[in-house]
Amino acid sequence: MEIKYQLVKEKKAKPDPSTLGFGRIFTDHMFMMDYTPDKGWHDARIVPFGPLSIHPACTALHYGSEIFEGLKAYRRADGKVQLFRPTENIRRMNNSAERLCLPQIPEDLALEILLAFVRTEEDWTPSAPGTSLYLRPFMFGNDENLGVHSVHHATFLIIASPVGSYYKEGINPVKIMIEDQDVRAVRGGTGYAKCGGNYAASNRAGARAEEKGYSQVLWLDGVERKYIEEVGAMNVMFKIGGEIVTPMLSGSILPGVTRKSCIEILKKEGYKVSERLLSVDELAAAMKDGTLEEAWGCGTAAVVSPIGELCYKNVKYTVNGGKIGEVTQHLYDTLTGIQWGKIADPFGWTLPVDVD
Ligand SMILES: *Cc1c(COP(=O)(O)O)cnc(C)c1O
Image: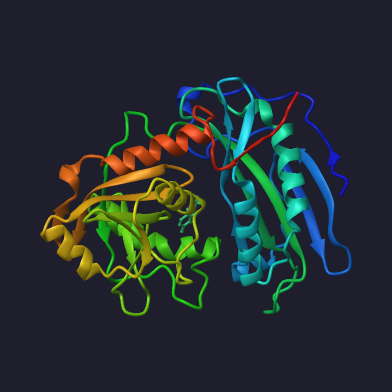
């Protein structure tokens, strides 16, 4: 597909890398294309970054038909820019699209678009340690009427934001509250899809946890409120009695690329990794008898986020003395090493963006 380029005359000044934060600054351009039943995907274009004009009856605004992805472009020490497992994100986006009755994008086309866009914005990929260019592909239903039906018109965009190091003062273990009232997702629902609605439903519990001094909630399953699912907007892993345990992908859990990568690294190194049901009672017992050795969240933004304290029904448990554990640190070093090209990539996970 031909991509039309309408480039800015004057590029914005690049920000000071120490002030980046997350998702506040955007690059010069954005990618856009439209879908209609008669033309399919069409009008692929890279245009100046700016506001969209949306019909007030737009489907996404009323019925929440929106999906998104999140991945990063990393600048290596040799100056080249690379992506990490982008095809995983593309496949997941198409699974999300299928669930929300949005049109899918052929894998080859999606990758071609992503690469063309990253090449255009390549100079926005910062080089300071821990910084990267966060890429946010997203799609929304864009029918211009209030009828409730599956989506016929859709719009797909990619925007990009240079982001800072997630850990400015070293990796600090976080305090997590186990949520026993609100649920994030149920089997048969949209938990496995990366859609905005899941986040909207999560906000209340997150806000309540924050009020009490916790940074995230640990979600339990939506049916029995018994099994561990995710932590905030990250997947979660535990080391219990030497075994790595992570909730299995039951349909209500988002299949994270970082989760998958952690599992593959650990298995390759000979760890016993179990994807299975893990009840909050089993976890509480492991916290009480001291067999819970480590706990961490994993996702693209933070890579891994060690959990130093868990609170369940007002009882507080400290994990690994509130310090980052050995496996958690090892995963962080390995993943970030591969992503920024500091260590060899034996898995073939990285894809150079190839700018000359
Ligand atoms: C995006 C996301 C994750 C992490 O996925 P990654 O591909 O590792 O970034 C985990 N849980 C939820 C709910 C998410 O939206």
